[in-house]
Image 1 (tube, one colour):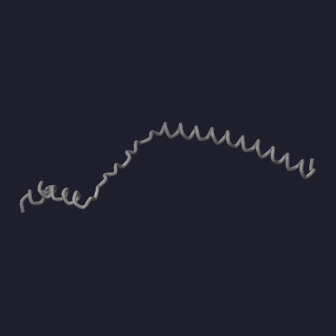
Image 2 (cartoon, helix red, strand yellow; image 1 turned 180 degrees about the vertical axis):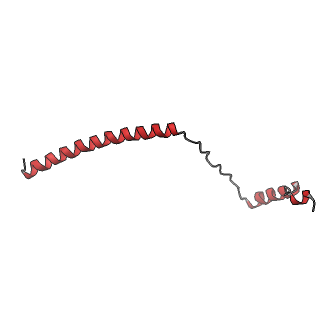
Image 3 (cartoon, helix red, strand yellow; image 1 turned 90 degrees about the horizontal axis):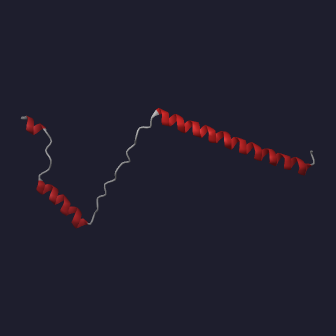
Length: 82
């Protein structure tokens, strides 16, 4: 065997044309879906995002605590526990 027979050859041009005609005749459309390119996120960006999330968590916890204290005070008042 020669080295050219081992290599994979592209289909002849007339074969590609036959495939195109087959798609046109059948009305089948072939859509190419592009995969989104994932950009590597640097460690600094990840750390900055984590810090922002931590700050948001602190704000939300504080807000929740205030709301719960208010509800507890209202419930105590309704039950006459104050």
